Image 1 (cartoon, rainbow, N blue to C red):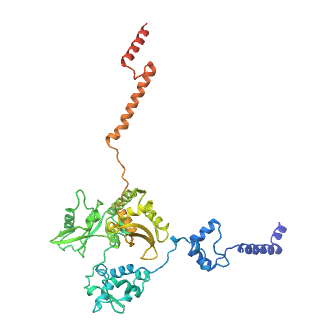
Image 2: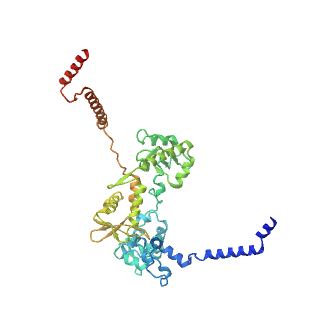
Image 3: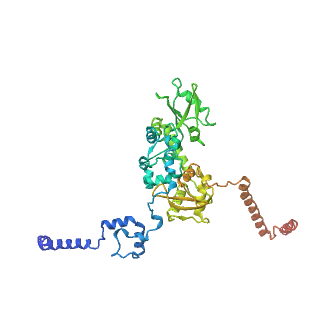
Length: 460
């Protein structure tokens, strides 16, 4: 054993083992693929093209020795995956700048409002407009804006250094920006029951007066789950069970407390989360239970146009597939199912009727809002207008067009039972016919004579 032990760890054996390990390590590194920075860039630029060439085992159309590092795979890259970053057109630039100086925006845009108000003549510096993220995305320059506003009502300084509202119109009064209730994270925030707050409650009024006033305006058989105490800020929060049109009801709810009219405000975001923390546990549990129930009910097949989908998520995936499978500028075939689906979806858009007017076709192209792609409506006379499918799908999700299952009437339900009775009777008659040798469909008198003859034979 000692000799074996010494032999297994002899210096010669150890040296040969180390040499074998080094040799194995070197051999393992030889076939390793090249991982230079240039190859990594090429793979990132065109992953689809490289993957396609490898899967098919085809050689690249450009020779390996002559190809530039950053040109690998570009020849095979599909048009749908290639998004060219080109400046937006004049119409898009004009529309965006006009929005910046509109009452709609300035009513909530404190920064631009203050900048315009600080100038005696109401001018807004061009540099401030060009610094906006959307203008940067469009890659618009000062010259682009000047050219785009040529036919606009907005006024430009002679040197194009500033722009102002038509006739230096007075600024609208600043207001708090409304919460975006159409966002995905707040669309179903009140599935389990609306949580709303009432502000400005008079000091002499308590939660009991609030409850009575709100209860008097609720639909029949709907009772409030919870009403909080009126806090030091004159706020009172309430929770109602879910009912049809509950969010719209509370958004327009106005009650009179101590001679003062106050409005309800549906809670969203941080305010909703803070209010939920103050609710009793059994009320929170009840909301969660109702929310799960509504989610389960909502996960049902829908139909848009003539096409059915297992749920809204499947519809969203189909629209994305249509976008990704087309190259920039490719029009949908009017006789195809994709065209019919997008046209049917357009009917759910908040301004669907106005947008679809005069539409002759639909195409896929780069969005004017950035490096994304969207659908464009082709109008009579060659005009084009982009349309947001997100707004369409959001509208579908708010009011899903569920597949209707036809319920059988009482007469239709009774028909199978009646048929079964008739069949059973027919079977019984058939058995009688076999035993007597008489067809059940023959004359009843003949059957009676046969029975009589059998009886006489039995007596004999």
